[in-house]
Image 1 (cartoon, protein in one colour):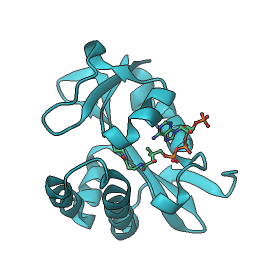
Image 2 (spheres, helix red, strand yellow; image 1 turned 90 degrees about the horizontal axis):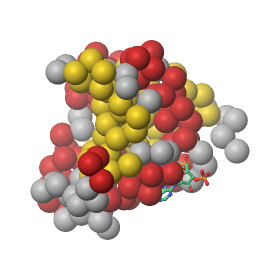
Image 3 (tube, rainbow, N blue to C red; image 1 turned 90 degrees about the vertical axis):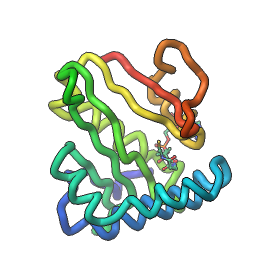
Length: 159
Ligand SMILES: CC(C)(COP(=O)(O)OP(=O)(O)OC[C@H]1O[C@@H](n2cnc3c(N)ncnc32)[C@H](O)[C@@H]1OP(=O)(O)O)[C@@H](O)C(=O)NCCC(=O)NCCS
């Protein structure tokens, strides 16, 4: 199903297309679950410059098909606890969802050397993606199924 997809590390030249796919996924998929603002403000903050910074500070992966980024996801070390890695910027372009690209990206994050050294992966899940992360083996942190004030759910997975 997803044999035409390859997963590779982000390059600075991906910044514009990855920024666009994130804005598209946020507004199209998360729009029904969140108020237009601050969702719009968050989408506007996902600039190409922000992507290049993410590429410098995390291990940032891109799912590519025919030379075009169709998804992205990052893993980064917690500066206060080297045993914990955060998962960030997890998006698949709306028209390519449901084809296993998210799973491939999660496999890449879990195979990443930083996450292999960690004892715990953590993330803030949108309501939109909650079912996906549960499917990928993440549970609510401290069993708390309540969202924070931004409407995000703290989730974790032991390594
Ligand atoms: C969440 C997201 C990354 C999933 O990517 P995807 O490529 O559609 O997921 P996959 O096709 O790889 O799905 C893998 C499995 O998870 C399941 N799944 C995917 N999304 C799901 C959801 N919202 N609820 C329940 N299960 C879900 C699939 O059915 C599949 O199950 P399987 O094991 O039976 O095959 C993607 O839908 C997305 O970008 N959503 C909008 C943006 C967003 O909210 N990003 C996260 C910000 S925290």
